[in-house]
Image (cartoon, rainbow, N blue to C red; front, side, top):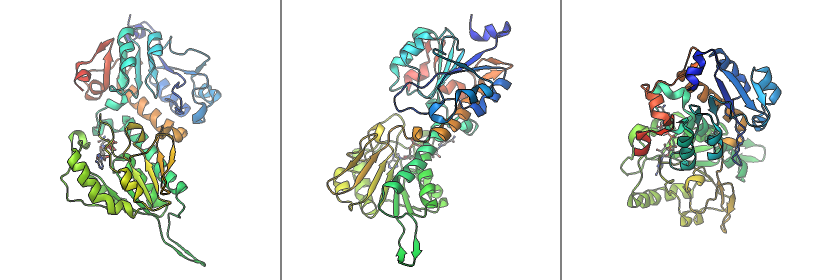
Length: 382
Ligand SMILES: NC(=O)c1ccc[n+]([C@@H]2O[C@H](COP(=O)([O-])OP(=O)(O)OC[C@H]3O[C@@H](n4cnc5c(N)ncnc54)[C@H](O)[C@@H]3O)[C@@H](O)[C@H]2O)c1
């Protein structure tokens, strides 16, 4: 009997939230504030005790919000599981047949979890696959988390730099503002620009998509125009560079990089390792005290020599901060925004207290990876 059918017999479907198990993951998939929305949809909510610890959400707040706090395993009884990271193969194996999971899940790297989901006969939705159409904006967890990462990148740059960001007129004389360069002006890059601007830095930015130029300018930053073809790809994303184009881009950007005090890199191409924008030779040519914040460190790095979760200091006195679990470094607001994204997609799937995804819907069809144990053909193609 599937969970949806069970509901017709008077059974209330149960949404469960486990404690995240991946080391360094401090977010929780559901914050107390939003639980009333699920209860109003006719759903029951169970939270594993301690799940919200790092996001400042205590067990008692969850209880006050109407959830049941469960010590130990919360997954066995779940009809729907909300998590940030994909469930591990071991967790997938404990789910009942027909259960639904909603989380981030990269089809390139979560093969073990996908195999376990097929074996368990469950349905898996990946937030990475939610189509980036206007109707899905409120469900776009990639954007909400990239926003957190971009904000954090600017703060890290300001923190590690030996300079002030703003222009200061003091009795001891004038302090000139820091020059911040942002490479990759997507969601994270634009938020880094906005944050660095608020701190008073002079900001310039470059992106391979010409569409980003107006967005950069609207933030009060300068867009760097290079004599290179644009790399606008499908769905508003960038296309991969050829090695020849990459070398040309690096050459043309070198003078801009050399004069920046803080360099923030956020460039990404979906499904590919991060493009190499800055080589070791370019880092070596930077002035001592320059700070590089590489948000792409976990996916190969935009900057040669960056290491995820580490600050590398070069012989020339340049510090390279490699991003690792960056949205998790703002666990309160990253969890709040993520919760809204998952609740919005769950709301789309729910009618009269029954979670029954409509696979004719573009958002549902686009984000499903496994349906009742069957791998979707579109996913295999991707
Ligand atoms: N619902 C929606 O309509 C929606 C939602 C989110 C984002 N978007 C759009 O999608 C686009 C990108 O989103 P994202 O931030 O998730 O992208 P992303 O994380 O895939 O990439 C980050 C940025 O890196 C840039 N980049 C890639 N290769 C580069 C290179 N070699 N040099 C310099 N920059 C490079 C990309 O153009 C992008 O702007 C933006 O246009 C954004 O407005 C649309």
